[in-house]
Every structure is written in C-alpha cells, then in structure tokens.
Amino acid sequence: MLEFLAQTGQNGAAVDLVDRLARTPLSQIVILVAVCTLVRAAVFPVLKNTAAHKRVGLYKLARFGNELADAIVYAGVFVFLLIRPFGIQTFKIPSGSMLDTLQLQDYIIANKAIYRYTDPVRGDIVVFKPPERALYENQKGQDIDFIKRCIGLPGDVIEVRNDVLYRNGQPVAEPYVVYKETFEANSVSHKDPSGLAYRASRNFKLVKRGDDFVPVQWIGRSVNEDGMIAPEYVAKSQAEKDELMALPAAPVPAGHYLFMGDNRDWSSDGRYWGLARREDVIGRSEAVWWPIARWRGTR
Image (tube, rainbow, N blue to C red; front, top):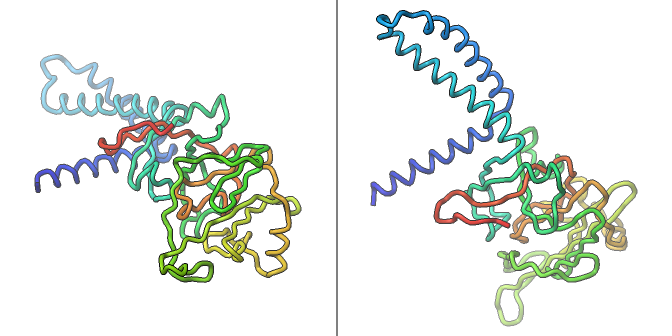
C-alpha cells in the first residue's frame, strides 16, 4: 500500500509539472529557444571540426548538450509556438464549480483551434479569460482562466426561475446541473414545519440599465446581495433593488456570451459578474485526461 501511495504521489507531481509547463509564459519560451539556438550555433563548429580520434570525454558531453539544445528548440517551436497557441492545451480544474461534470483536480484537454473558425454553441464547456470584475482582490493581476458551460449566445434571453433555466421563454432541460446546498436557517431560508433542511431556490435575469448589462440574482427578497456578486452590481438600496426587479430580461448582446457552472449553488459565474467577451474565449473542453480512472469526453 505504501508503495502504491508513493507511486500515486510521483504521478501527481509529474502531472502537476506538465500543467506548470503548459502554462509557461510565451516570453520565457522564446528566450529559452533563443539561448539554446545560440548554444547550438557556438558548439556545432567545434563538434564538426573535431577529429574522429579526439571525439571522447568533453566532446561527448558537448555533443549531448548540443542534441539536448536541439531537442529543446524543436519542442519549443512545435509545442509552445504552434500547438499551444493554435491547437490544444491542458488545464487543471481548480474548483468545484463544474461538479459533477468536472471534478476538482481533473486535468482536461482544451481545443483552441475550434474557436478560430467557429463560435461557441450552447452547451459547450468553455475555457476563457474572465472579466476583471469576476476576480477576487487576491486574484487580480494573475493569469487566471475560468471554465464554465455556455448557456447564452448573442441574442438569447436567459432567465432562471426557481432553479429552472429558461432560454427565450422556453424551459431548458439541464441533466448536467447539480444543486449541492441546503440551508439550516439564515436570512433567505428556514426549516420547513417538518424540521427538514430547506433549500431556497435561485433566480436570475440579465437586464439592460443604461449602457450596461447587469446580472440580477435573487433568492427570496435578497436581490444582488450575495457575497459573490461583483461589487459594481451590488444593489445598495431598496430603490435600486426595485429598479432591477422591474427591468425586463434583456438578450445577450453581440460579441458576448453568458457562462454558468454546472454546480449552480457554488459557481462564481455570469449570474454574479455578467457577460464574457468573445475575444476572451480560449478553447473548448474535449476530454478529461487525468486521472486515468476518469478518462472521458466532456462533450
């Protein structure tokens, strides 16, 4: 058993290393490739002009270094300058917002080529750069990616009424959605007469207020008070709450998408911070590649 645990830990460390390498900034890759190219340029003439009977000792070491630099150059150009920007990339799932579809610590393969010639469609699991307002203070300035499901396309009117998604006025079946939260007693819910824990359903709509599209999330009488609401969208007075509730649901504007997590009770998504821009879309999740026991497609 100890041997198995040790092996598991080593595999986990190796997978984490792959994830870190996959996220290496492009500027660092370019510098590394340039340095290796210079090393090869400097060493190659020496290796070429060394007489056959002298090709021992330091020569073999130099040849190994040259071949290693050569491999790094080809790998850097092929993987990091071609495959990663234009083809596929791996991502690690850092939170439970996509449970049960994606588990915490899953590693996925994202198809980055698909959205170069087509747009996201409803139901796609999408990796994207979140808007600044979606980040907590300790996340700002970091290179952070979100992964959520595409719920609303440009032109779609999206609402959630008592936990049921409505698209353009029609209810939508969402077999992938889970609700994991029950409340004992707080400001928006209570125990029912039977004494069982009671779950307060969530509601959502997107409204247009001035030039901005504002997400409106309410549970009972609590309107845009949830701690996950982006600060600029928090309703600061009863009059503001009444205004938001009175506004009609608005369609998703052109060039934007509405994303939500499958774990609707525990997902910081478009219901709290609004829309994501088309230019911030990175790729579509295709499969879980690690752990091995969870190998599966995600489409």
